[in-house]
Picture 1 (cartoon, rainbow, N blue to C red):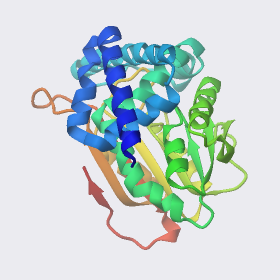
Picture 2: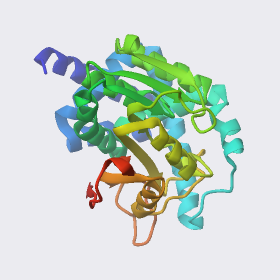
Picture 3: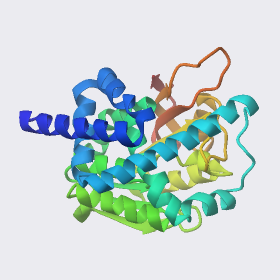
Length: 319
């Protein structure tokens, strides 16, 4: 990595840290903590995002405000969850109307908040780093390097795959028009749009016509009433010999989280029940419990294959 890029990243992060102090003081220390924990790798990653996706000061300020609102809402919901130990009863249709088809909320809060959380929430960045180091090379090494992402969200995982696998092409699927536009714009700002397209599609109701070499699905399972049905659909989308990268949030009381996973083992059991073999997995908590027995948000990422393509073997894991 060039010294010039390192310096450019350092400068824009310093500017952004100052803007956080002015606009969202509560969260300004997150930047210093991330630098301390992750060092130059994080500085380069976050600096690149800011320089390409949020180079405009006004757009960056809007994103900071959106992140602050998103994070505060999540904190309040988490405090309630610590007491009740349950997510509020909500159907998928209700969550979709409240979040995915609420254009103002998606544009101003949810999507910018979620995107910045991948760098400012340690467990989110650890999961992204796991993808970069463990799964993206699999995409680059595959014969046709053709992947799909289901529930494309902000586009960060699709963009990262395209960056690290220079011959890869991808398709992103989502049900939210706002998310589809946001993800496509995100990929375009990195100069990768010619190798990527986004479609509005519910893959459970309308599966793609052809399977893919790799399939990504990041933090979608907990948004559904029946996540097993999605896992079965993801398996059907994956070529024989292909792999899936599937993640889920645990004990995280966000506005659109419906299905409560309490332990990593519950996620692994569902993945296997869908006819998938777990090859490897990664798990991290957001922070240490404030006291014994308090549930803490966590993230698990699973690398799996359709069962018929592998012999039985015990998965390996890390955290």
